[in-house]
Every structure is written in structure tokens, then in C-alpha cells.
Image 1: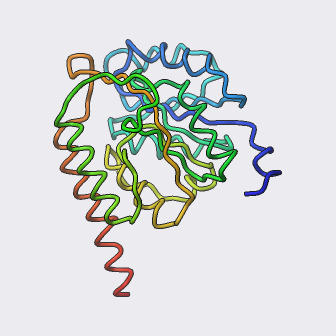
Image 2: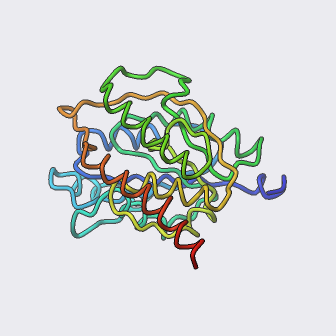
Amino acid sequence: MDDNSLSAMKTITFIVPVYNERDTLLGILKKIEETDLGLDKEIIIVDDCSTDGTRELIEGLEDRFVKLYHAKNQGKGAAIRTAIKDATGDLVIVQDADLEYDPEDIKAMLVPVFKSGADVVFGSRFLHAGPSRALFFWHMMGNKFLTLLTNMVSNVNLTDMETCYKLFKRDIIKDIVIEENRFGFEPEITIKLCQRRVVLYEVGISYHGRTYDEGKKIGWRDGVHALRCIFKYGVMRRFISLVW
């Protein structure tokens, strides 16, 4: 992309998948709006059939937010797929509603886009650029293992495939068919991006993780499903494409 195209970028779309985040949603929306990125912001909230009052909270928000609703709980990947259809920003980023990720870190993620021609930027929790809460050794090891396998099938050297903070140029993310409904979105989108040979960067970010008592949702079953996704998109589909 040339300098003129980069200078034409004016808007970033925040996709905020939400499921039972009544206690943190308003806080993260405030952080998004207060963070000066030098870009206009479009904020798309997708309620994935919350049952704790989150849906009613969203319905009461002002119309400057794009508000979308699922009639039944489908998962994070499905919420992102729903939101992408309505995204109009030049850039698109996924923002969890749980306050684990700080929008201030997006400033650093924008640098490779405007300075190095990046198509996609991942915010890595393991390239520490700020404070990170010490939690869950085995989650960390599982993440590193899944990232290693993804790197092996994709021939890249990422440190944090499972990160929420993934920043895309809009035309790239809109051109990829997202098939996974839940957390399998993370390995699926990473592998599909690498197969397209996009210019992919990582930037260190801070991380303020939650415990399960504080509302963390991802579990070991999601890790097992991620393994299946790595095999499905990184091994089987490559094998089929070579055969046919």
C-alpha cells in the first residue's frame, strides 16, 4: 500500500464481542472512546445472547454505537463474523469487553501499519511492553504450545497466536470466510492469514488477566478444539489442496 493509501485511512472499527460482561462493558467502552489514536472510531457491539443483564445495558446505550444481537449464544468467532459485515473502518480490531486488554496499547500496534506496511498486527502478551498480571502457568504453556503448532504449519514465528488483539486492514479481514464460532477463531484466522502471505507484525502489549472467579471463560476444552482447528486448517486443507 502506497503512502497516499495510508494517509487516506481515517477510521478504525472496534469489534466488541460480548457475553455476560455487565460489570465491565461500560468500562471498556469508556476506555475505547477516551484513547486518542488519531483516527475516528466506529464501535460495533455484538451481544452473544447474554443472560446477566448485559443485553439490556447495551440496548440503553446511545446510538453512536452499532448494536447487534444474537438470538442464541454462538461464541466469539460467530460474534466477530456478524460484526465484520457491518464494519466500515479502514482498520478493524477485536476488543474483548473484559478489561484484560488496554486500548492504549493499540497506539503501538498502529505503528507497523503506517511505518512498515503491515497488513495485520498481533498484540503479543509475551513481548512485554507493559505490566502483565501473573496468572495461570498452564494456560501460558498451553498457549505457547498452540502457538508453536500454528507456527509450524504456517512457517511463521509468532509468540502469541491466541491474543485477542488482532488488528487488520478491513479489506483483508472482510475477504476471509470465518468458519469457527467459538475460540477456534484464533488459530483459524491466523493460519488463513499466513496462507495468504499477508505482511504480519507483532507488537508487545500489556495484559491484565482475570481469574475464573472474575469471569474468565476460556477453558481446556477450547484448547482441545484449537488443536483440531490447527489440524483442520493448517494440515488437512493444505493436503487436500496439494492432492487436488
